Length: 300
Ligand SMILES: [Zn+2]
Ligand SMILES: [Zn+2]
Image (cartoon, rainbow, N blue to C red; front, side):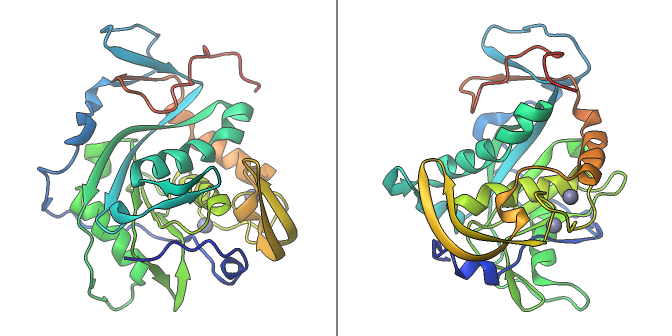
């Protein structure tokens, strides 16, 4: 169990988001009975390129220019967290915390490009407390592969749906603590990311950053004002959701920007094409059900 950190200066010493080539091997799911029991999502009800048609009045219909379905998986340590938020001193439970992070992560790109991250299911997994180190691998890589294996998250089975793992255990890479990791995008690669929480104003950026890797960006860029950028910028104070954090240090652009530089933008706009006109039907209750605008009203 890892304590939630809220110190702002500490995090500039940390880095996040290492990527690596997908090397997940197919294994038998060890806890399939747990998988998708919550909200029992019917993946067959996700269609590409179909026109809006309510198939069942119990279903909500989401219609965005791009809808990226996300299944959230939380490990047992993450389920213990109390997630600090500015407006609630008691903190949020894990499910509200995850919804908060993911719904904030796409606010900017939803307005600008019509890209909507949509949580379509929750599940749990039992993370290994003492994962065995394997030569040639980093610990965060091992943890991500463990997650993908545990939930049998293979492209041929899960298609385009992205698995977002949240762990309460620390992620380590190269002797440092890291905050997130994603499979490197290749054709038919596993679509999964793994992250831990660190601080309110950073967490949504970590999610946005990692999912952008899955959408096609294999590198960390060095441009100003880009969520993929490791270039640093001096931040005195940071204001987010009506709360002020004192930082007074250099931080990576990735921690504060939700923008894309032109090169990253071009890759992502190509990478989201398979998600265009995604029709998403699911039973209530919905999370962040704001995607009601018809295709065509977004700027190009
Ligand atoms: Zn990265
Ligand atoms: Zn960039």
